[in-house]
Length: 375
Ligand SMILES: N[C@@H](CCC(=O)N[C@@H](CS)C(=O)NCC(=O)O)C(=O)O
Image (cartoon, rainbow, N blue to C red; front, side, top):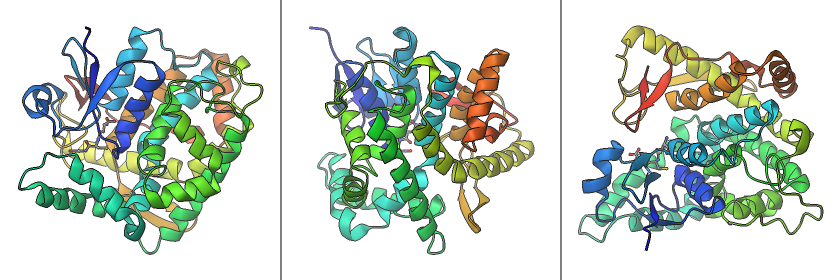
């Protein structure tokens, strides 16, 4: 019997949802285990370097830590089934990957942690059961939950900004709901890398914790269906009566999706600019060595950046990982011919996202031995 892939992950984890969905959709057999399982600390962690989920162990024993790296591993091996061919669709797919992984953490954390009356028991079950039943289990659960309890604030949700964060999320939800009235996936009839990235916040937090899940079911049923669909191996699109099987023809990016990006750009663009400025100042001052970790617990701590949204100041953690993924969008653009670039520029202009092409860090981030490091 061939052994399956092992996916170290957990149901309530944001980034796990992205890798899990990819494996399901690509028909890759796997067994999901929490990091509390035998073998993780002794056998997987030394190779994965950081105890983050998702981490994949292949049947050959290779360890791949990080959701983007897991997806890239299969994409590279299988002829890139989830990357559309046209320049516009490629950029949109890569951009939704960034937004999903780093641009929607504010509402994700807000709707998980700031509604304890609806969510707390549900969330506690998952934190508790990600660990073995040892005498320290309760205490460790409390410690883990206490570490996360203020996650909303870390990404900029305060009494002052709460209404604004909710309004923007609802506008985004409504726009995405209108898009899924037309198509079952972002770019048509099958999922792209961008769908998997966007699922990260939309599954474990916004689509599954009781308070935001009910909001999504009642207000944005089509989005809720997409979340379900992304966790099924088949196309799962019985409600579309003219369903095709591929990405949309002629590199089309539907107007309904541009409308979603127009809402998302409102905080994504100023936040990305502010974070780049902050991290670049940090880089100038700290001059990290080439090969030094840029992301995660082995990296040096950074801080927060401020930006303005609809007249309110938001202070949020500046994370280099956003730029690690954004580099991919920028490389796709750089590698295009002049016609491709012009088409992409026109599209990004139309949704308020053009600034993302030129917002860069002064140092690139690359991957080495399962870590994202400064080049
Ligand atoms: N860039 C990583 C992030 C993974 C990550 O931070 N996962 C969280 C759970 S959703 C985690 O393991 N946190 C524990 C820690 O940072 O020690 C990925 O996309 O896989």
